Length: 313
Image (tube, rainbow, N blue to C red; front, side, top):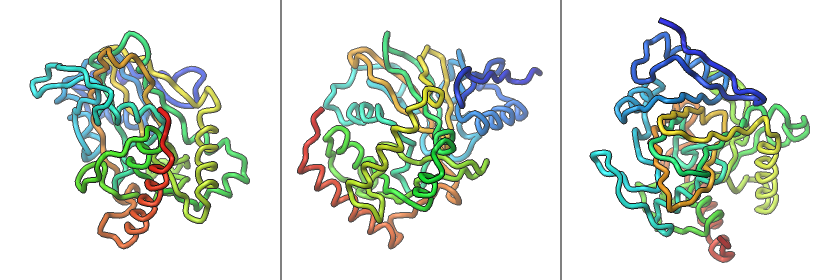
């Protein structure tokens, strides 16, 4: 049996295209090669896989426990039998979340345990736009000058999807325990040490706010400047133009990603599976932990300020 062919993406600090493998029928040795490549390159593109829901879930489970499996991350309703229905209105909460994903982020940092890795498979794609972009937060940290590295080592920021939706879109959905709008904010270090490789990266993005020890303005300025730095070098940014059948896998412990806008009247149907992180390295704290109360207060105060200064969208 031939080994998967892993081709690094030219003129980029990260990423590779993998051919010569069927993700729905992986041997242990093939998976081992893919896992090794993911740790090396940060993300992998698998063209023309056309995975079924069951195959995507099975592939995801090889990396660990799933946060969710084979969920439609799309602007079009998907029925239980896999058929597609109406396209969502722009004021639909699901659609507001999808539009919010057009800002740089790392998955699930607003949960107690953030994500290890995630994958998307394309079913339907728009004629133009709707790409998924990834950014190399490892290369960005390494490229920071030593003074900035010294400044941010040891700093943390709170992470909340309620914050990012309010800050980016002026979207204030009802708070409800047990949903993604749960009223919690989780404190995470700005500098992430990868638990498998030991490589440092920047854990920032749209969900991050409120660095303890800094004023609100200082925190917003620092987080914005770090994000701008990550994406300022073209070699650290990759834009994937979807084709039906493509599968994209990325390491949430090393990269940022975002969707790109498109004509929302056209269907964009991607199926996603997300792998939860190892609690030893990805757990911030649980809501029952006394530390969680500080996050709740920080989020409530930030949301009050954002309500007082509406976002123009």
